[in-house]
Image 1 (tube, rainbow, N blue to C red):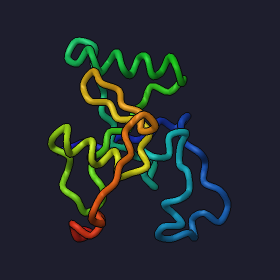
Image 2: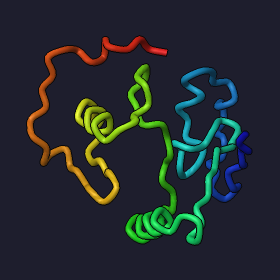
Image 3: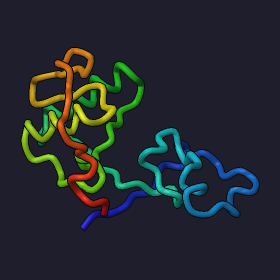
Length: 133
């Protein structure tokens, strides 16, 4: 069970005239906050917090990210391509990383940049391996 929290009013982008008439993907494509990737159309979000006592490494990551960017938020999402099973191993993670437009992959203390990886070539079209959900 997960509580969905409201996005703080000061973080919201006010609705513009005519926006209430939008429907479907047009409505979803309207930014709702300074962090649109996490904000639902009703100005709610599935917010998770990190405490330095219970998860010091992740807290430090967020703290450093905020110092670099001014944004204390990282998006937590499933690691997979639509239709594929969720990544369960470093090998799965590397395959997903190389097959997509991700630029960087972090595995524990290892930082991999796509531009520094050996050429990736596949013998089959991996997009056809799993049916879309």
